[in-house]
View: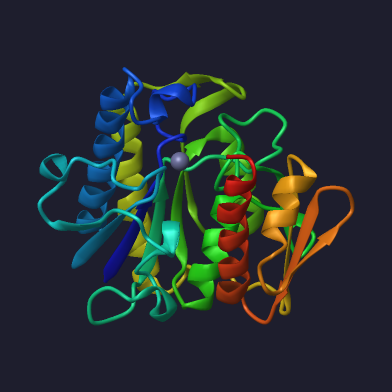
Length: 282
Ligand SMILES: [Zn+2]
């Protein structure tokens, strides 16, 4: 069983404020340590559950956060400026890594969607979207990434983050292990378990997820087609830039609607729009 592990930072135990997740902040090295710790816990759990190979996608910010020497030596890490971002290497459109498909994907350090009322560091890909929906339902990185992976036949077996993310995950991926490493207190506030406790929870969850994937009880997320993604941006300028992408059109005051024949195509337009929007407010 080949395992795909996407690791973000805002949802880790011990992270409550976005500041230390930014390169250059004095708290950043400690945040990287937390990221490596939960990544290693997932790698260890995956191997205990029967993984033959774990590919780690560094999925935060500039996407070269994880310190390679700190990582479990059994894993391969994908880092750097990846066109396909948080799902790079997991499917044929995103340069499938290795010689076969992944049996399961694990999301660690994840966080709730943009616009969530009280989840910790709620956002979707950047801070530009104030709300995003997939086929009319509010969605965050968990649901969007899972839909792309689902189109490539890869089920998501574990999502780790705060308690609000566990609720969000239940709505999209009821079969996935939901690991809660902190309780949301507010947008920049959390009540977190100790990182050592979080690692134990992630390790156990990853082991269960890989075992359950082997039995075939996890489902690749299937979304209805055509796939409609709507993103509300902070201002009309961001929306104007995002609407330059083929398949995208403006709606309402600050919205951009994408309608595509499948999830990976919708994702391409979504990701391109987010990136263009960042130029509008640069
Ligand atoms: Zn992040």
